Amino acid sequence: WLQLENQVAIVTGGASGIGLKITENLVKNGARVIVADLSVSTGEQADGTYHIQCNVTNKQSVENMISQAVERFGTVDILVNNAGVNLPRLLVDFRGEKPEYELNDKDFDFMVAVNQKGPYLCAQAAARVMIKNNKGVIINVSSEAGMEGSAGQSAYSATKGAVNGFTRSWAKELGKFNIRVVGVAPGINEQTGLTTPAYNEALAYTRGVTVEGLGTDYSKAIPLGRPGQLDEIGELITYLASDRASYITGTTVNISGGKSRG
Ligand code: NAD
Image 1 (tube, rainbow, N blue to C red):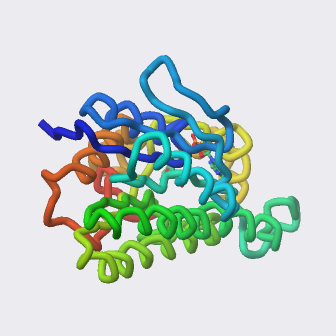
Image 2 (tube, helix red, strand yellow; image 1 turned 135 degrees about the horizontal axis):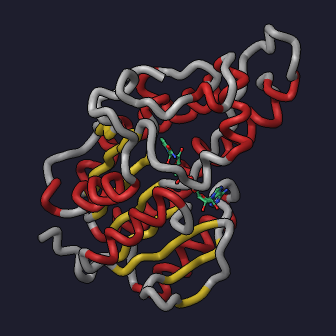
């Protein structure tokens, strides 16, 4: 019922985790999906998607990716800015045990480059196409951490807060071209490529607990008592990308089971 036939969608970071589920849901609803990801080789895929190798932090790479998409599929109707990275880091390693888990310039710049600059570069290149068409949807994948802050994830939270600012501002700039801009903020979810053992170890240290102590008893932390399923996020984004959501723009939707503190 979301009727995305003939719609051309680009999903950055679509090769893994949440992006993979966004891709599957868009395909299921009829869209032609281009996965733009660092980790893929360019070419047609058995599942009907088209992969384009792209580094969202690099302007030339992003512009090439959008040009290739337009050359091959004629247009870009939907952009999902999903590619993201998260390195848990304390502002100050006050325990003095693991300086590698104190925020440093390199890790800070890396998160800003992928999570904040990436969406800007992709949206700018895609919006040039969408403005010509007088039609388009840009979805920015934020995070609950970007809405509420998160201990041990200040730089990550700040990049996602910046993304929320993009969502509000681009909606105001682009509404007159019939382009909607919507954010989606997931909370704690099923495991993805991002929530690796290294991520858990860093997060545990920043929280002052063991990895086991990070816990899987979500009943206290999440009102709905369970982590989010990646498919639930994919479905929400597919709905928001469709004309069924034709009056939604400039806002970020929480999909966190009611959790509101990181
Ligand atoms: P993931 O690591 O499973 O997938 C991220 C994908 O992005 C990978 O395929 C990776 O190759 C790609 N990528 C990374 N850097 C890139 C770059 N420079 N250029 C192009 N592609 C790049 O992660 P995920 O958990 O599915 O995260 C997807 C999004 O969801 C991120 O923006 C993340 O911040 C957000 N998010 C995730 C969670 C969670 O619980 N996993 C919670 C809230 C928000």
